[in-house]
Amino acid sequence: MKQVKKILLVDDDRNLRYLLSSYLLAEGFFINSVDNIREALVSIKRDCPDLIISDIMIKDLNGYDFIKLLKLDMILSHIPVVFLTAKGMTSDRIKGYKLGCHAYLTKPFNPNELLAIINNIFYNIDLLKNYSIYPINNSNQFSKFLETFTPREKNILKLVINGFTNKEIAMNLNVSLRNVEKYISRLLKKTSTRNRTELVKLLISLLRANDGIRTRV
Image (cartoon, rainbow, N blue to C red; front, side):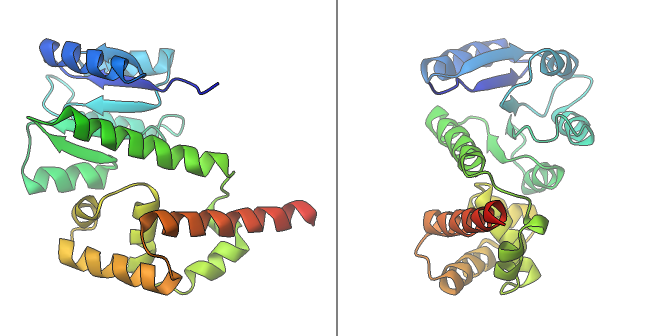
């Protein structure tokens, strides 16, 4: 039986929390919502969520403070964070991605887009878990695979695996969207894959093969 994913919603807009909670509940998620960062931290300690959706402009501690605190805690640093905010400047997005958010969506937003982002994040996490992925440094085959790429290509590959869009990668690495598109095309060409899905599947197959070697030895 598939486990229901738990999402923590952090926003001081009561109406938004109610509407978004109702929408995500209808999509099959378990939702807990709070209106400030301090309550969010208490909630996380009590029942760790699978994903967090947070506003940035919140009284006292803001969304940026929140993600910094999460990344400082080894137990909580793995939790994906989606910023849902009215702060739409490019500099705000870049700051969010540099701090480690998985996605950045500005208000007003389309709930279907948010749902697609959430499902994409969970898809990539589940994909890696299902195939028992080892850390890159512990995989000899994968290390050899990475030797064919430049440092920039390796960074982009990791972001692709984590479900970042081209636009999000550009903001995260502070490069132009056109350059990201060129790098993605180069990655596909080097791996003889046609799209992102095939690229991720190739990575999975290499690590599964390595897993088999480790098991038989």
